[in-house]
Image 1 (spheres, rainbow, N blue to C red):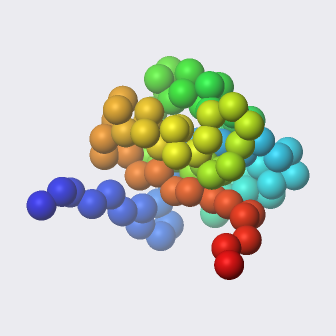
Image 2: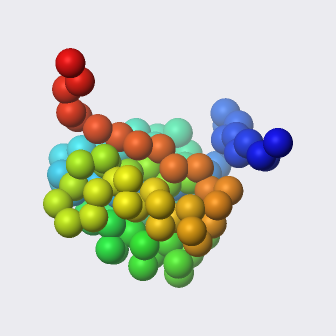
Length: 96
């Protein structure tokens, strides 16, 4: 059975946020920081992967639909480097 990663309320997590829209990126960073998390923001997948390889993160949150590298591809590449790192997908797409 795979080991589940859990961020316990009150713990301080190192979170990488990948979001191409500046306003959304800033809101996510502010919200997570207010919960005492250490947040690093990036505006695209290439930048995120470079930073992910240089620093340690407890979690990655990525936009699903971005120009260039999609959130799906970011997730796939993160899992290749660190299979146990949780990756959350964020989207503003409307599903019907």
